[in-house]
Image (cartoon, rainbow, N blue to C red; front, side, top):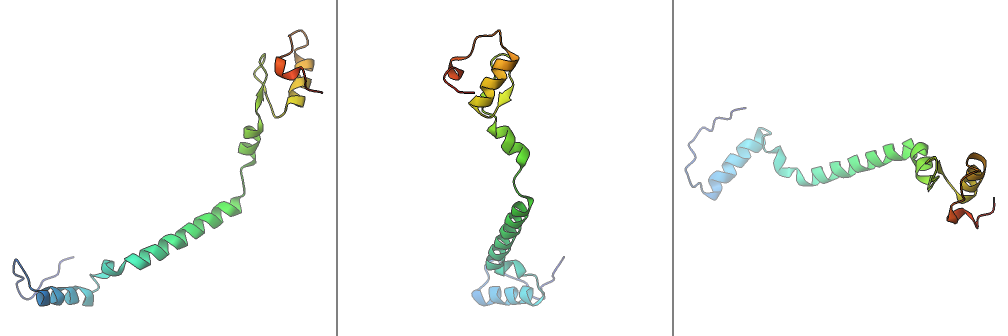
Length: 109
């Protein structure tokens, strides 16, 4: 968009000339980004609240939580289990000929 100024602006304009140009731009709606600071801050807050509401409505991902809970890994077959009791039961039933790992010796099944 072009805006033709009716009088020439010198290389070093005075304060009054700058004010005249600003008022000319403001009257045509071209200086709207001058007052954008507070409006931008409000928009960012509104967007953050909206994103938080969307995240809250989705809930948490059960699949990811279940995967994070699998902390024990069988040394023979690399199967993952959530607790040592289950791990010992797995080891006794699936690998009866293998020697028991030292961390499972004291666990009661």
